[in-house]
Image 1 (spheres, rainbow, N blue to C red):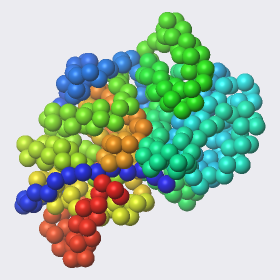
Image 2 (cartoon, rainbow, N blue to C red; image 1 turned 45 degrees about the horizontal axis):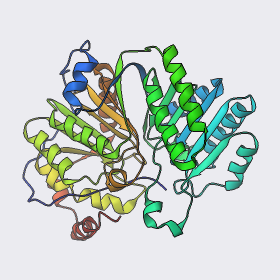
Image 3 (cartoon, rainbow, N blue to C red; image 1 turned 180 degrees about the vertical axis):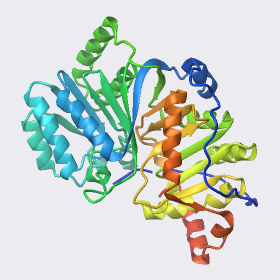
Amino acid sequence: MSERTGVSGEEPPEAGCSQGPLPEQAPVWSPGVSSLLLARYYLPRGHSVVRGNACELLRDGVEAYPAMLDAIRRARRYIRLETYMFITDAVGELFGQALAEAAERGVHVKVLYDAVGSWTSRKSYFDTLRQRGVDIRPFKPFNLSRGWRHLLRRDHRKILIVDGEVAFTGGVNISAHWAPAGEGGGWRDDVLRIEGPAVHALERRFLATWRMMFQDRFHRWATGLGRLRRRRGGGARGQVGLAVLSSRRSIHRAYLHAIQRSRKSVLIAAAYFVPDRRLVAALRDAARRGVEVSLLLNARSDHPLLEFVTRAFYEKLLGAGVRIFEWQRGVLHAKTAVVDGAWGTLGSFNLERLSLAFNHEVNAVFADPRLGRQLEESFRTDCGDCREVTLAEFRRRPLWRKLLERALYALRKVL
C-alpha cells in the first residue's frame, strides 16, 4: 500500500501553454546569502530554522539504501527507525539483518512501522527480530472497533536516526519497490541525509510518536539523554538552515508561502497530486506573473484511479501557463519542491487529502542556494526523461477519459 490527498474548485480553462525544453535558470540569490535571510523571506512566521547542518541529497534506493545501511552498521549507541512500509522482501530482510546485528552488539534499536502500510509483511519475521533484541512495533494495528477514523490516521513518516549524529528523511520506505530496476521496482524518490542540530529535531518527532503510542518510560529516558547531549553541544556540521515540520498544515502553509513569494521558478515533483483550491490558485498566479512553474507527475501511478483525478486539474493549470511533465520510467514516488533554486522541501508529505487531513507526516524544509541548486538540477534532469503534456494535445483526449476524470474528480475527497 502507498500514499495519497485532495480538494479544488472548477474554473473555465484558459488558452496558452509554453513549449520547448526546460531551460536552466540564472540564480536568484548569491551562494553566500545568509540562510537566516532566505528563511525569513520564504518561510511563514513561526517556523524556526536550525542552522549549521550538513546535507546530502540521495537519489532513489540505489544511493539511499547503502548510506542508510552503512549508518546502521556503524551505530554505537542507538537506532531509531520510523517508516510507513517495512516489507519483508529482499530489502526488508537486508535491513532486518542489519538492525538485528546492531541489537546483538548492544545497540538500542527501536523500529516503528505502520500496520496498514506493512500489512503484507510476515509477522513471523518481526517476531524473529524481537527475539534478536530489536524493539519493533506496529503503529495502530487493525482494530475496527475504534472506528474508520482510527484506520485512516496513519504514520506516513520515513525517519532514520543513528546515535543522534546522522538522520535520513524523504520518501523512501523499506521495500524492494525502491531497489534498482531489475532487482526491484526502480521507483524514483529522494532522501536527505542530515548531520548537525536538525538531527535532534527529527529525533524529537520519533520520540513524540513513540510516547503517544506506547506511553512507556523510554520517552523520559531518551529526552533526558537528549538534553544532556545538547548541553554538551551537538556542534555545527555545515551551513544549511533546516526547519523540520511535522504539522500537516504547517507543511501545506510552507508550500503556499514559498510559491506566493517565488520570483523566478517553482519546480514540484509530486507522487500523488490532488491539490486544494489554494494550492491551485497559488500555482496559477505564479505562472501568470511570469514565474516558471513546472510539475513532474506520474504517467502511471501505483494508484491508477488517482491518475484520472490528477488529470482533471491539467486543463486549468496548463491554461495558466504551468508546464506539466509526466514521468515515464516506472513509478515516481518523490515529494519534493524547489523555489528559485534557494528554498526547498522533501519528505513524506503528498499534495493530496490523506496527507493534509489525516496522516502523520514530516518534511525537511531548507533555505540554502547550494542545496537548492542540487535539487533543481535533479528535477531538470528528470524532466529530460519525461513527456511534456501540451494543452492542445490534452484537449484531444477521448471522451471516455474526460467523463471518467469528471466522475472521479467528484469523488476526490474519498478516493
